[in-house]
Image (cartoon, helix red, strand yellow):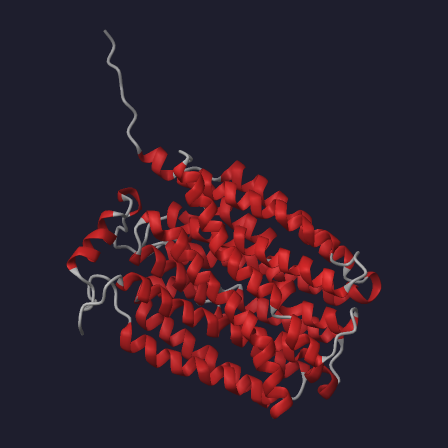
Length: 425
């Protein structure tokens, strides 16, 4: 294999492509929901249980992270990606809400590997100064996948039926697995990595985050305040992404009166804005660092800015124009990814490289627990109180998350620096 210039960016591009397919397959359900619910006579409450089953499955992210840290990124991620592709295709065989619930639970378990895998790749392949941008690029995959889901799913439904949409997205995942197994290797083993780039990657890694070669201890990680400092903000922030992915198409249909073609035209726009947020968050961090702010404080500052912008979500249900509501949803997607990519990347700033995937998975569990609770509340109460209280809640939760981030997180780099001892005269 010939040497490739800037190979680390090719690697993160490949990981981003996997994330695109990952989020494309999970978002297909939300777009197809109005059609398949009518076809199979599924109620809103039953749909709430279907989405909750996915969240229960994806809450097992620590299992995915532990497997990735234990057997390696290359083979571990390939196993999980192959599994989620086949499970997505199996959705075409479902004939009841119970069948969908089982498949969504299995899909959540397999797809929970994407974020730990992405953060492990970022921690392995990038020096500290570039991790924010690399993490932002990886998270663009989430937004792009969710953005592609409405037009692709609607096209499949109008051309064939809703079952074809699941088959197509699953088949794309199998193609990516082949590409991943062919191209990916660790920096130590990749034959296309130049000596200069290998030295640049190694030289930019923090010494206090060097892995010790052992397997991560989940109990030890749970005892650290830095874990809770990033896990609790994830718990409070992630319901926004769950709402955009699973409930907004249904909201636009039932409350705003959109038909299937209008869903295809507008439901992807918040995810375009989210793509920009993935780049805006790291840009804010770099801007603050250039002005003397430490890396950890810069990330906290970017999260806080995103939380302030998220308050726009409080007015989605209050405005009369559906197009203004979509604009506010776009602001919410932009703000959410601004803060989300920031706090997700902090797992690579605060923990050893041999622990990053496990920590990202554990924090992801907290995030998906938040989505699970929020989805159950929407499914059980939306017929009574409407969507407005939930949009208001999304505008408030991230402000609480910012307060937690500033209160709990400590910079391990500063702690690790030796203190100068002045001897007694």
